Length: 574
Image (cartoon, rainbow, N blue to C red; front, side, top):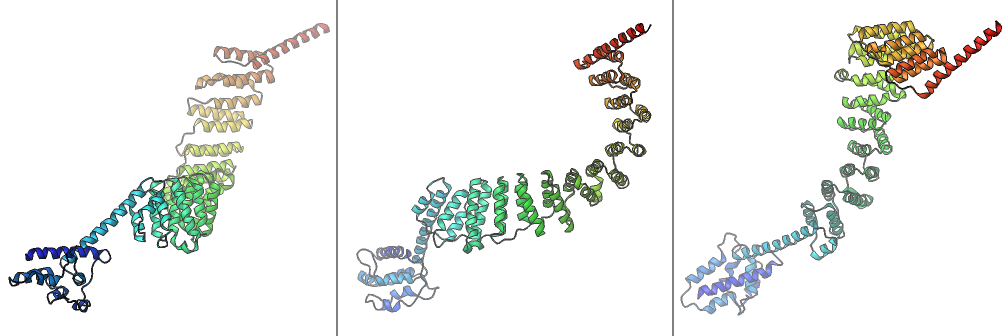
């Protein structure tokens, strides 16, 4: 009997707890409700046990059960009912409701926690529905968000942005929808999270949408503080990664307008985006601002900037960057200095800068820097500054890098072109003294110099020396000598050289024969030797063009007519 009554009372407690938990999860125990319950006619001394102010008091349900156990057998059910006062529907009166709210331990509290867990579970289910919607490709996203009727708060928005699997496009749409509520404002962390998500995706349209959002934030005075320079730098880098150089330049142009001063990273990522797509006009504008500000990246980054400008033919801008780095005592790595020297050597007006840069090379870079030194020597010879070229050659011999045949040949060629053949021979001797063997090209250059000056005896001496050092010569060597002899009209010597070409592994081509035949016809008027050379060409399987063949016939006919006229004159005189 008593056990059934107790079960009915516990069920009543649970129903009342569910009714109260929707508005308040737990209530701290309080004695302020005592007067209210004291005024109830149904209250008894046993009811007051539910309002113990001490947290160490025993469970009220246990107390009730204990008392019921020790009651006299003749205790009436109405007495117990009078104490708890349940109606026929199992609902307690106002006194019992207040009593159960005042308890901080026992079954009532456990029931409240269970109900709170149900409410939390309901919120989590709605949050999962929100994530499912955002992860879908639903076009009417805003309508779906409105239909979910989510209680928006900043913590919820942050959780959404931290959740994986949501596209950058949907994150932007969700943020714009959320910020229409007065309770939600854009924060720096939200923009940074959005930037990371879109950078990982790498979609151009989303990057442009993010840039539009950033512009709206930056152009609004009340939200300018949301942005920072790092966000703009990463956005520039993102556009550079996507190959959108114009957008990257637009972000850079807005940096100062948004109240930020570009730093070294700003300049670097902007120049990287522009140079890699060959937008050099804008890159030069950015470079000029960087130089004026005096802000430079360090290490490999400044080396990369110099290399980019050199590849695009902007050696002067690259040299300006180098000069500023040198003034700040932050020289770029050697791998970027060599391309800069080579780029400066291409322009006659910047050869002096390239020569000056050679002095900045470290000992290690100098030992492995034959390419930049050779480029400078070649450029000095090109601008006919042979004196400086030879001085640089001597410096290379004393300090390194050790010059090879190519460097010596450049100076020999320059001396020969300038007519200073004695200087060319001295360089040749210096070359031999270092254990280098002059190649055929070296001898040919000096022979060419002598032949141009009509000094064929000296040219023959150089040819003889070349024959001693090399078993096989080149057609250019013989062609140079033959042209020299033809120039001074010593055709027999030229013919000898033509005949001896085979002995040194050189086979005369049709062009060589054609020029010799033209010389014999037009200058020597010796059609017989010209015809002999023509027959020799036939034997070797070489073809002579029709114009030159006609020239041989014309000279032959002209001389025949001349001989007939001369005979007639002699007969008439006799």
